[in-house]
Length: 152
Image 1 (cartoon, one colour):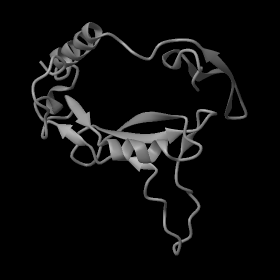
Image 2 (cartoon, rainbow, N blue to C red):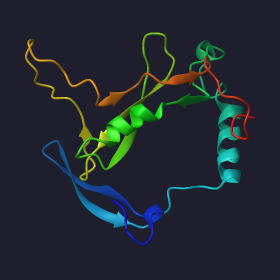
Image 3 (cartoon, helix red, strand yellow):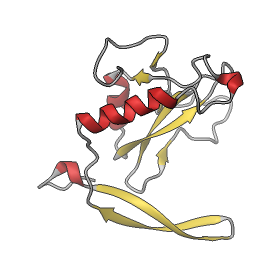
Image 4 (cartoon, helix red, strand yellow):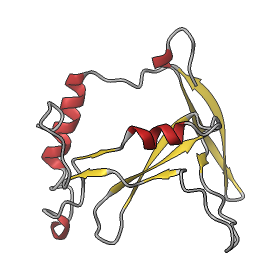
């Protein structure tokens, strides 16, 4: 959700306050905050991640590219998610295929903070909507960007 006077400082989030009969119930609040950080903070965050990304893994998974340094998502994929009429934001999940290399899984989110997903009750003759979940990114390693202050 955006405020006309300051587009950078508005976000919608849900606070869960109780669980009843297996269902979470929450209240939605508008919180003013900036989603942007300085280059210095970005450098600090990415440097720390690079420093510890292998050591936080069990020894068996170290040195195998389990955790990516970065992922590049083509703008067309993001534009497609954002073009959905109900989309008001994006959510990033982290997934792991059989090769155990973590990948981003990105979906649109509606104004109530719910994932915009293909229908889960499709019959065998119906086709799933193909353009609601992004996962095919350019993952580093293997496809890495040119050197920048964020990848040291």
